[in-house]
Each structure stands twice: as C-alpha cells, then as structure tokens.
Image 1 (spheres, one colour):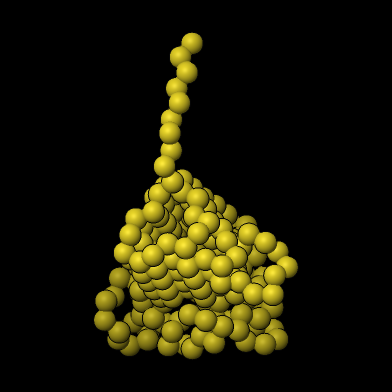
Image 2 (tube, helix red, strand yellow):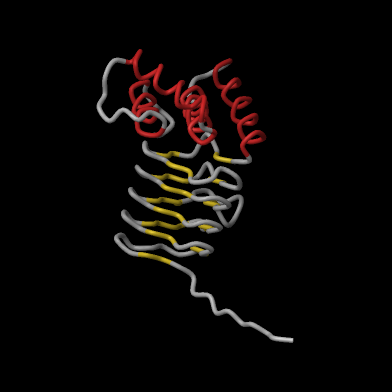
Length: 186
C-alpha cells in the first residue's frame, strides 16, 4: 500500500488482516465480518481503523484532516505509533500492540509480523532522501530496533528479539544480535 491506495486495496488489507475470510466475496459480507471481529479484539480493531485512516490520508481536505486526528487517537489509545505515510503491504500482523513504532519513511512488503516494543525508523533527520525498505514475509522479534538512513531487509527474513539492525540484511536469513550475559554473584 502506498500513498495512492485504492478502495480495493483497502478491502484486501481488511480481508487479510482483520477478517477470517480467505476468498474475496461480496463487500457487504466482508464489512459485517470485519466489524464483528474487530469489535471483540483490540489488535484487529486497531488494524481496521489504522487502514481506514491510511486510506483517507491520501485524500485532500477534510478527509485527510480526519485521518490525522483518527491516527492521533489510535496512537494514544493503543500506544502504537505507525505513520500514515508508511507504505505497508497487506497482511500486517501485530503480536502485541504497545510500543510499535514505524516511521513514515518505511516501505514494507506484504505479511509483516511485528512484535511489541519494536521500532522501524531513520537515524539522521534532515537528509534529502531515505531508503528504509523491508521485503515480504518478514518477522520482527520483540524489543527490536531497525534504524538506518539507507537500509534494506530482504524477503523471508526473521529478526530475533532484542536485535539492533543498522545495516542491510539479505533475503532468506535470520538476523539476531549476539548477547553475552555476564552474571556477577554476591
């Protein structure tokens, strides 16, 4: 999904992220299914309203202003800060809502799975351009930080919990930050 999100792309996101329907069908049955499931689940409710705000954000005037206010309310209520300018493909899943931060410069593929307290952002403010790209089918562990101004993460990558990613990661691999534990006994 980019800045020019069509209504069909919005419906695809709702179908993949909120609904349990696998096949596209009538729009009316999808709406009922999405709203019924979102009513019972915080994560699904957040994804429903975030995708709607992202869709409305591309419009001009009153709809864009409403989208910004809606996103601010979602940020406060769910403790999630995902920019409306971020490009995130269909199939995004969030394991636990609190602490997820995604910059507006991020370009993320399909089927992102992100866990709590994870950040995807830029390192230096004020540059003319940024390249922060994440491929399809990427899984990001809890308390991970992906920070860089020119960074690419390939398809089918798993990023381990508590990892700091500040360089590009090739596709089809697992990335984690090695930790050495030191225990001092008294």
